[in-house]
Length: 135
Image 1 (tube, one colour):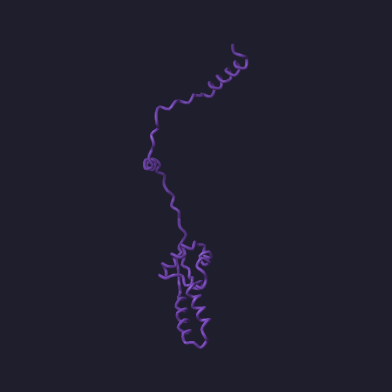
Image 2 (image 1 turned 45 degrees about the vertical axis):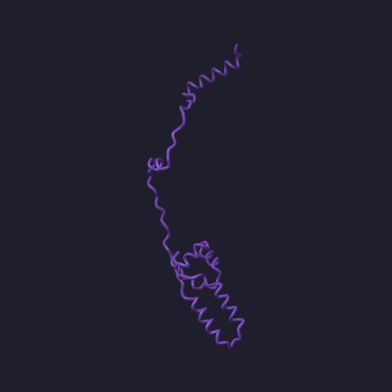
């Protein structure tokens, strides 16, 4: 014999099933078919929104050539690798910071009347040719 609790519970459960149109989960009939990525792409064709890129800017970085490359890249908001590529595309040479520093050190070590200083200063001025990069 069922207790009154079981009778009440079964009655409530049956009324819940009838009122909510509850169906028991069905058993699976074998493995589900997998849909390939290309098939999924063909099915869901939604128009893609084009992301507008900001206009390209040209920046004169000649006044920054005496600084380290990473410092200039940070000031412009670029990674060092990206800035290096942009600089090499614009000039076809390496960043001149080390060469400028070595020329300055050589000039400091030479006597002031040495004729070689003039050649070094000319070479240093060539490194400061105007450089404009596109970002």
